[in-house]
Each structure stands twice: as C-alpha cells, then as structure tokens.
Image (cartoon, rainbow, N blue to C red; front, side, top):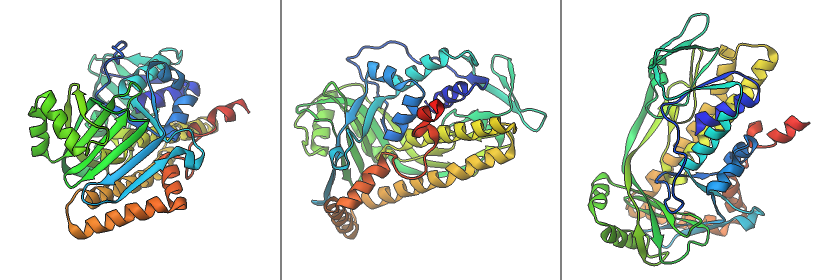
Length: 396
C-alpha cells in the first residue's frame, strides 16, 4: 500500500518510476467476504488517497466510516467515548480492507505512462556507491536509478542489502484477526476493550459485521485458534462483555506475532526506507499504515523540491531532510504506543486505578478529548502537501 502510494505520487509529478512487486493484488472477490487484514485510515491518509485519485475507486469497492469510538477498561469502570460530531467532522476515519487499497492503487499505477512495473519479480542484489545505485532482480534484469526506495515490508530485502540495522523487541502478544457477525448492529462505532492480556478491537464493516483484532498472550492465542467456530464466538462474546450482543458467526481466522521495530537509520547512500521497512508498531491505535502513508507523502514533497531545483533525487541532503522529517515523528508514535501497551496490558492494581481515572477525566474534558480526536485523525501538526491541499495547490 505504501509503496503503491509513493509510486502514484511520483508518477503524477512526471518522474520516471520503476516498481518491483512480487505479485499482483487480487482483482476479484465476493462482497460477502471481508479481507482478514483491514486498516483504520485517518483523515490524513484519506486526503493522500483522494489526491492520488484512488479514494473514489476504493469507495466503489468498500469503505466503512466510523463516526464514533468507545474505549473501556476491563479491570474497572473507566471509559471514554469519541464522537466525530463533537469536532464538526462527518467521521473519525474509515475501516478499509487492505486488498481494497492495494487494488485501487495498482489500477491507478497501471494508468501511468511513466511508471514501469516489474511484476512478478523481486530484488536479488543491490549495488551502491557507483555513479548510480542499481538493482539486480530475481529475473536477471537490472535497474539503475537515482534513488531506491524500500517499501518492501518488515522483512525488507533492500534494507538488509543496504546494511541498515533494526532494533526492537517482541510484545509477547499475538493478534488474532477475523470477521464476525454480532447480534446487534455496530452503529458505525469502533470499540476497544483493554484487558490485562491485551486489547480487543471491534471495527465496523458496512455490511453490519465487525473485523476484530484480538491481541493476547501467545498461549491464549494458540488456544483460541484451536477452538471451533461456536466455541470461539462464545469466548469473544465474553471478552467483549457482549457489547454487541451474541457473536453469531466467525469467518476464517488468522494470527500473527506483535513486535516493535525501528531502524537505526532511514537512509543509506541512494536508498531510503518507508513504511514497515522502517518501523513496526503495536496495532492498538491502528497507526501503522497511516505512518507509512505520511512517509510516502513527505518523500514525494522532498523529491518534487529536489527535481525542481535540479538536485540529485538520491542526494544526501534530500535524504537527510526526509530522515529528519519522519524519524522523530515515527519514534514519538512508537513510544506512545509502547506506553499505552504497558499501561493497559497488565493487572497491576495501582496502574488500574490510574488508567481508569485517566479515561474518565479525559472523557469529561472537552478540549483534551477534542485534541485527542484531531491528533488521531492526523489533523494536527505540519502535514505534507498530499495530506492536505495538494490538488488545490497544483491547480493554483
């Protein structure tokens, strides 16, 4: 998703772009099935995708606005409720299946005359330090470029070949993902219950179902994955305190380990990392892909400026600007999510009192709650052009 967004942005700017991708996204599926992997896209990410000309196509497939969010703690009575109407917004964001975003971006990329796709293919070797960096692909083809951008995920081959180290740790939690059909309609409200073993999120889908992200201890995740459908539904109903009534049906389930990752550097000579290639974050606030889209948007801004000034796109000055613009912001969000995880994923009595009091105070404080909503939506701070008035700026 993140690499596709950057490819679209750079091709819109008239730059020649080569996109290396292992496989095309799926092009057809039943609307009765919901992708296991979904993302909670912020307003900033929505603006980026609108300005890339793909949001309308995503809406044709399926996007679900969530107009409220309810968060509560399992070890006390503390809770907080967010409502988009309180800050004059139509929604707080959208729940979108990853395959929808991927396909819309892929179709847009296919319309570009100055973008060439190498697919199916993958990076085999990389050479830096010469006149131009170049890649050798698994097919034997070679690509020389002013800049190589790694958007190839948590196990980035380009990052490895560039010799950029990654640090981090396991959260000792696994996330179970699935689509469930609750007895009651979700009412376009995202819900999250914090339990000592990890958070459970119920994310609304516009057919009345919910996509769940249930983060829990590895042993419990293994137990839950072994249950049959009805048994799992009963466990989920209990874990959600029947907030949507009975859980009537569950689809296929997936599970993946959770870990924090952050690279020591975002750049090397002629190379930059974006998205999961640079950072990995706990999914409790749904910020992962949103950080990646901002990486791509900032990179697009800086490469536009470099091209306009006649500077090399992979020049050190341009890459350092990118690293300074994104590394600190991403680290701040990673650290904040770590603090939330440590504060909520435990049964310590004193911390339980603190977090329940904090939730209640934040809920009662209008200005603070409004700031939290705007911050979560990506409406605060300095934003790249793609995340704001990029299209209008081009027209002017």
